[in-house]
Amino acid sequence: MDRTRRRGGTGRFATAGTLALLVMSSYLAGSALAGHMSDWTHDHSDRAIPDRPNGLAELNRMFGDRCIDRSNDGRSYWPHQSLDGGDYVTYNTYIARNVGYNIRNHIDAAHRDGALYPGIGGYNCRQMSGSTLWSTHAWGAAIDTNWLRNPWGQDHWNGRGWDGTDYDTYIPDVWRGTFPGHRFYWGLHFSTPDPMHFQYVTNY
Image 1: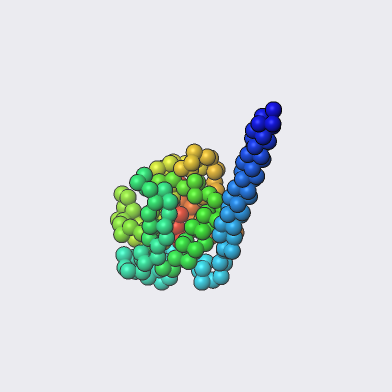
Image 2 (image 1 turned 45 degrees about the vertical axis):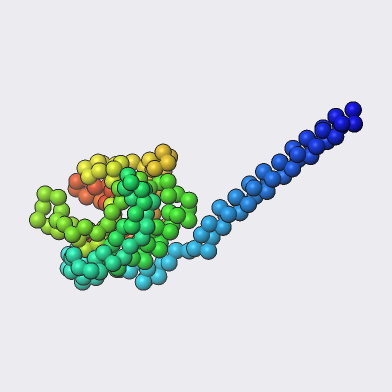
């Protein structure tokens, strides 16, 4: 009977110890998540969110010529950039602080990297499809986001991310607007919708 009590006592002690470890592990995990980028804040200075050009003349004046070094000298790492995984996306230095520090960190700090979906891309020295006009991508002034779910010509935004959750318009809301968005113009409003497309210029 004494041995039984000892075994029973040891079992109760082990169970209590296990519960204590689980509670501590949960606490530490929660603390780690709570501290994730806790010191990060948006930079809404004029340097981070500069004037947005209106029309081709202002685009050239503010971003410089198309297809030059500064057109793709800004970059940041994006998970789920392609079906192969994460990679760097490049864009113009004029919007580097806004895209890399504000927008990318905004999504990361909110624990919403799962809202992203392949593909994601910025600078591309090319003309618009079916046109002789140059694409805003040639200036590094546009970022296409989640294009495999949001192709050119689709008249709505598909918000289902990599993790299978429907985030509704969370991603477009980060790109556009004044706050908490970051002043990008959404291609969904083009005459032919382009829901993947977010550009830092209007009337072009």
